[in-house]
Length: 155
Length: 124
Image 1 (cartoon, rainbow over the protein chains, first blue to last red):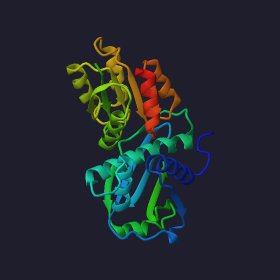
Image 2 (tube, helix red, strand yellow):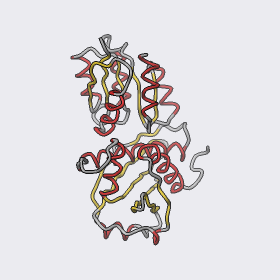
Image 3 (cartoon, rainbow over the protein chains, first blue to last red):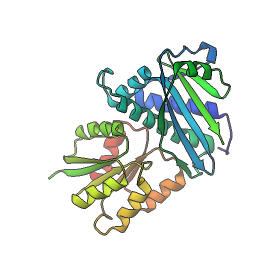
Image 4 (tube, rainbow over the protein chains, first blue to last red):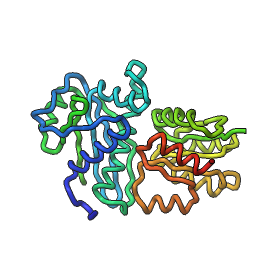
């Protein structure tokens, strides 16, 4: 694979698909922004950066309900009643960390040495999410019929 | 006398998953310690006798590379087997870890079978 070959959004989709299937047995479906369901509640925005021979930033935005299902599945729990906020954020950070590891391999190959930051989680309002989904620099998915926004910024 | 194993990862969720997998292992495991970074790991290693360290790379305060380098320079710790479980995909970095004498490398995401296989390779 040559450097910068292909579309970053496609690589994010591929990395996300691989990781979600492996970690939570769920698949993301890429959708057009207009077809993605609206976010009804405030969401969690998890972000990570990589730097070195190449640099960029990845982000995932989803509602807490879906994030708590991810956490429950990672932990092998049947329901989300026993999932607390810190576990949800921890699971989201780990998820994006693994996605980023696979994204940079797909994007740049196995040769570059890249430093991957520690992921950070922020809150974002539903109105902001629903405006963001029309931004041409984001990709939109559904997972289990819930909306997910992915962001890739190559520096 | 069973094995004493130390899990090192800044994610409590990952450690909980690994604890559950270790609990289902056929290996005789007496005690599983856990740490969130390299600094905590060195404190635990200096106070206990461990048979295996399973560590992540990308962690705050002291990452897995520095932890392994420090363990290899310490006469008391240099022979403890290390398995790395990480998102690291750079072959250059994985080769460096192998040069430092790690016993196994597993890329995340992992399955429970992956963990059992690598444990059996290293300890079995």
